[in-house]
Length: 544
Image (cartoon, rainbow, N blue to C red):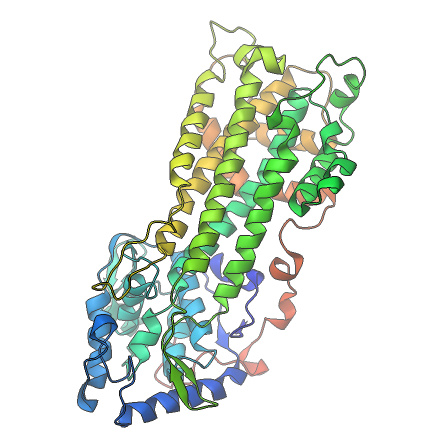
């Protein structure tokens, strides 16, 4: 696959993220090389000159006024990486680190960072060999770049850090590079700084959450529609005229999906006339307004993250066309932090309204179903405590949804006096995705149980298919039984994308995500060496 700096799509990024044990072979678009070489030449000239240039022949951060001799410039870059490799905690997941490698290569490939082609070659060689640098997950404030995690990534490229072994334990980097026949990277002027300045870790973490939440969000639409039918709710609130008057695009799309999913339901037809309940609870009739607003938030986050994935975010930036090197602050990850905080709110709200739907289903006074969805309440507790689990997860999400971006702490002796906290903002999303997925897994079981009490009436063909899928793995609860494995199985099914497939097939609706971004034509992005794409030009790199 050709890696075209500045032209990445969400499809390309998701392909890299999902590649698993068989990494895609990423090849730098050869048209990027002239700009890379020109910016590197400018840095090399600055390194040989007398004028102080930040990050080239000076110290870093608060030490920017300290001049470094020409003989020590390479040592300066090595020391930078070693001193900044101070992360703690569990290692980042391979999917995140693969994205980090690709995003950093693409950013440097824009030709404004002043690195030699061999730096990008090494990033791609490591990726293509299936090597995953061992990167501790904690230690970045998302301001002067994701310094600690990107330093651990770079240290591995230098042969001094570690890679993640198949058993999850660190493997010495020198050993792993030797086995892959990749020469350790020897840094020159500015290259260490270019590798660790930037938002590639926080961006990769946020993309990781976006891709993980997509099937969960789509499943929420299917499961929410199933609950509407289980509670004998009305489809009137999904009338397109209501949503057109408000004009919110996510709300309009979600209402359209609910109409399609509920079409043909015999349950709905049975109570169109004579239903004594004038209005359904908000958790049913306000789903387009709530979940649609979450969709709009997710779409916005996707656009921000796509821009960030294509950005140049190190410092100083090199403008070879004018011969200038300009110091700025593109490494500040505020856009990622705010996008991640917005995603947190959306993820929490999808789970929150699902928890309310479960509570409604088990409440006989509201759902008009047997108490706790069991035929012999008292002897059996039914879904009583399954709802408690959902409530606990929704409560956890409330705490996790607190915005991280407002919690700045000054660092580097007040030189870096406002930071974004983007890395934690994005990292905490995985727990929230898991919590919401489990809530929806419980709701799926509960809604299917509710439908069973309405037999012989059938739901719509699309929703009956969701019940059939669930019943292949989880039996109906005729009496109390060990429910935790069913919750786990339903959640796994939900996260696998099986309900997303059904949604696409049954409703015939377009993708929920921005068409141009996520469903881009991949033909233009695929390539091979014969197409002119190159994995690396340096003869010492021979990845498997």
